[in-house]
Amino acid sequence: MRSTDASRPDNTREGSSLPSRAFRAVGFSTRGLRLLDQRALPGRISYLRPTTAGQVARAIEVLAVRGAPNIGVAAAYGMAVECRRLPDRRLRSGLRSAARTLRKARPTAVNLSWAVDRVERVLSDQGLAPRELRRAVLREARRIETEEVERSKAMARAGSRLLVKNATVLTICNTGALAAPGLGTALGVVFQAKLDRKRPRVYACETRPLLQGARLTMTELLRAGVDATLIVDSAAASVMPECDIVLVGADRVASNGDFANKVGTRMLAGLARELRKPLYVVAPLSSFDPECPDGSAIAIEERDGDEVRFFGRRRTAPRRARVFNPAFDVTPARFVTGFVTDNGIVRQPFSQSIRQVLAR
Ligand code: MRU
Image 1 (cartoon, rainbow, N blue to C red):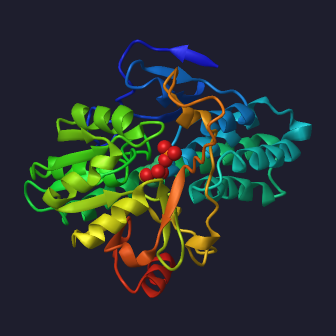
Image 2 (image 1 turned 180 degrees about the horizontal axis):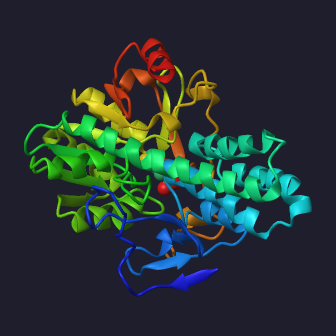
């Protein structure tokens, strides 16, 4: 399912006001689904062309496609991909089974199950003939993508207002267009501030063990012409005093404001509190989980220990070294200054304000 494309990423988006150099990580056309294989970045632009929902689930598991909103969009298109190959007589049962496979790919980002649930809801219309059902599934997947692009623009506009001129931002992981369609989440705010001529500067945590910060965030910031400096995660305490704001994304926000994000976020939050720096979580409402009462109910993905025992292909720990490798951690709501959402900025007390913003 792999295709290598030496040309630049797909920068053409009709009617879009996005920066011309924004990546498009997930795309669906008459030729099918195309996923930018983020494992190859920054070295190579190559694409996966999955033709089954199982292949889409695998691409999500191995982080070829990643970032909460993009995982949701890819999974929604995974249902559309499945529609193309299933015979009429097995269409509904096959789609239900595809939905189960996709939902299991990664546990923490709520966008995944949220998007699959939305597409699966189309199946409850028993009146649809197979051809109509296929169209309706694709329509819903496209709608989810379009909505996410609009959400990202709205968050970027709201977030940019928080940044003073020449603001220095600290961030972790990758939260740009590679993580969320459009401009991204936390990094989208930086891109918008740059468009607003505020000249933001960024310290990007490299984000061990898979280096989303080094490989992806630095690539996106350099392409956008943002003044960016890469740091090892453990240098965060050294640079935080000169930062104005910490901007991070979220994979799942509980209804009390606790949130899960890339492992290391909780440490940044503690530091920010100690140094009295504001910490904003930039997350679309599709990353809020009203069913989740607090952070203790969020499932944290644990990944293979070899991601830590190796640095790239080089072994850096003994084969038998015991490893604990959680992909995310939970930051308590009390460390959060506010959530930048597509429906405005949400502030304390979060239990009340989150309920209100989700009801709007
Ligand atoms: O494991 P990843 O690379 O999918 O982790 C991504 C993050 O932690 C992002 O911060 C998160 O998805 C929110 S921003 C889109």
